[in-house]
Image (cartoon, rainbow, N blue to C red):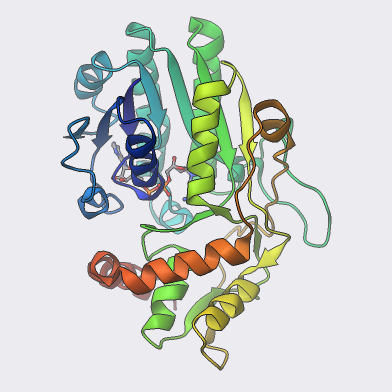
Length: 334
Ligand SMILES: NC(=O)c1ccc[n+]([C@@H]2O[C@H](COP(=O)([O-])OP(=O)(O)OC[C@H]3O[C@@H](n4cnc5c(N)ncnc54)[C@H](O)[C@@H]3O)[C@@H](O)[C@H]2O)c1
């Protein structure tokens, strides 16, 4: 395959590229990334010299640059997006621009060059929220009901991708997954922020009452799910991807990290809640399991331990990013 990976300097994108280059050494990967505040060239350090890897600094909204990149490839895996809900509340326009317009620009080029597969990486947040204390889960037939500018922009991009599949017969697939965690996630996101704060002996800010529940998905499990969809999935289909977490809320996640780090004490600081904060997400991933035989490799305990270990051993990567993340929160968390 000749893959165009957008947003490959971001968290999930760089994990995907590393995995793919190792597993498919004959394939070529072109990483197309604007290197926004969320894109880190340091995350590509270990594979940047690989002969089958190329990096282009570019904006998915720039039709000319996108055309040049798509021309050279046969498969697109589209990760590039503005991805932080808190930032979308402060500055929604850039989310619409990148997530909606950028996706449309890529789709146009994909049609023009008759791309073999356009895989769109999306989120379960497009479905809105579930109530606490129920067993309900999102599945492929759940109605869209986004609540934040981020999830609304991702929902719009999903609709565009499906429309291009139907209107122009573009072979698309979409995956909607739950919250990811693992190596190379920016310390502005919840789990790496908690881990790095605790490594530094600082408390962990928790929104509202802390009873926000996510279906945590380890990034490598997610990457394998995308691989499964690219190699075995059917064009036109959507697949939901989730973890092996049974309703764990943010307070419990912090307690687990404290235990892994062997720290006594609560180290929790409650801060003002996020506007329109979704209570609970849970993903029913039976479709990808039954049709394509994918499932997460391990449970949350095992992967969380591995994640904490990675942050303990890779300060070179997160230290320079930590300061910037904390400046962002200093201005928003009162
Ligand atoms: N992280 C999660 O928990 C999660 C969960 C569900 C879905 N997703 C989706 O997965 C994808 C990747 O998420 P992530 O966590 O790796 O995001 P991220 O914020 O870590 O990385 C995004 C990358 O996209 C690049 N980018 C942003 N705007 C761009 C533009 N205009 N042109 C080119 N590149 C641009 C950034 O430089 C960065 O490298 C996103 O589409 C996101 O919506 C993420």
